[in-house]
Length: 152
Image: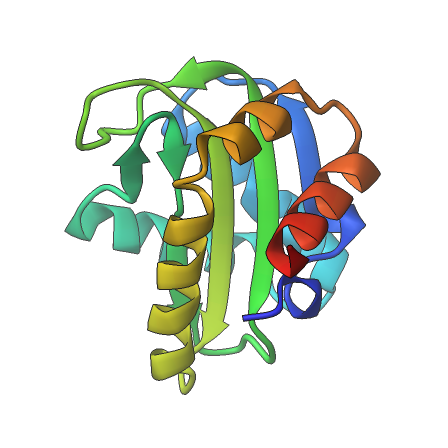
């Protein structure tokens, strides 16, 4: 996985208000729809929420990777989000989530979807990386931190 293929500085959102899981997914859906220009916020939101109904994407340690397949999606799309305060995400460890990577994948990219999720989970297993991301308040910096980390 090469993050620079699925993530842009414009899709890195530092210190968003942490209100609730539903509100976060609404906000990110709106931001992604605006950035992409060809998917609707409702389509993204409904797909992400349908996936959350199957089981929380909260991994633990304050990290979540909400993900879904969207039929109209043309390419794999990622967004990196940090929150100003943690929110309940029904994580496996019941800890609040404040570091989120949203992944949207075209319907036909099933294998790639699983591979990227595994790579993201490994990346977010690095406590130093997560600490640094949580302290970063600039979208360009967030982007460069994860891209540089991946290349290390």
